[in-house]
Length: 98
Length: 396
Image 1 (cartoon, each protein chain N blue to C red):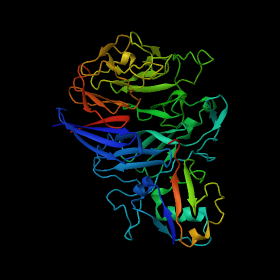
Image 2: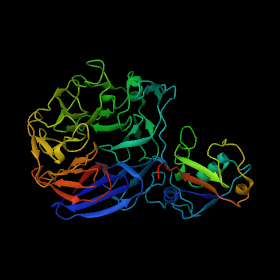
Image 3: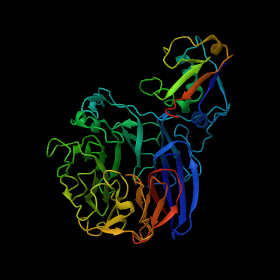
Image 4: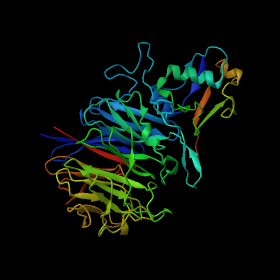
């Protein structure tokens, strides 16, 4: 099971609390993980990736294993610790200013 | 006895304010969808219990919410009314809503570019729904005005949306440009006397009319003024802020235009416009609305064109009982010193009780009511978040 940390607003929209888990068939990449996440929580479609371009929305970031994965290719493998469930995949709302 | 329900969209969620026909005591419910920007919410004239909401976020995009019981319960339209929002194994079933410009060969128009702030061409990109306008006759049919400017329609209660691409495909599309808040389609007026006729307005392109249910559109901006445009009388390029129509005089429209323009009136369904600014203190403001029972009585809220706040720090609604040109300030009950709030284009509405109520919300979080057509005002609430929109339902 892949662990995913959603920002508060998306947890509320999906009706979940805390971390969510999803099954991913085949290689674990950003694309396969987000496809699985949206299949399980259809109300999140369009909120993480744009409906039309299917690209990451510009004010969201992806982190895992203390790395910024936001600009990694969608089909690049995610870190083994994410694929094994040892570490969560973070979807974070970007914050400007302080 | 009649009652009223005021639907308030704010930068931090939605609220519903309810009262009986006396409009003295109010129940406040909300916030709904807390933390999200609620650009607009509006009830169906055909079924007042059906309410549509545009819930949006710069981070997470667009969501449409719907209530089928007057705001007690909400769901994203992907979940049919009355059904649980989760499947038997506990999984939520709702769906976000998808707004994709129509580029198909048969029904769509080429996805051209529009003018950017600096005059260069820029691709069309969906950002959010600015305005929701339910059909006058069918609760499941609803229109959405979006940024970047386009008109969408749903005929299944908001689950699926299709673009009325004849508008964006109007030949002037590459000349449209964003206003300060973006290139939004913010006004949709459905003609109560002609089901095929509709008016829309875009910042900053102007006003358009269809007479065939949305297939073809005509720019209706002749007579408007904008000293900032290089041509004296261009077909498009006007930053229209709002249009209002009264069903008793469907060919008469009133418009609040950007600074340099002011207040305008058309008596030929928008084909030509006349300046009716008269003695208004400024030419800038956002909303314009009409008394429910007096089609010649019009309301605007002038703002300082540079600061977008009430001139002299005095919050004044101006009323014309003569269809423009002659305006009187309405101040009783409104702050007349040190007031520096704004009132946005979708944040004014009227009820249809015998003594017509006028409502508006401010960026300071106040929602004001006049229960006597503007003669006196009082706040219903004082401390909501920044108000983006106000709509009123008169319930029997």
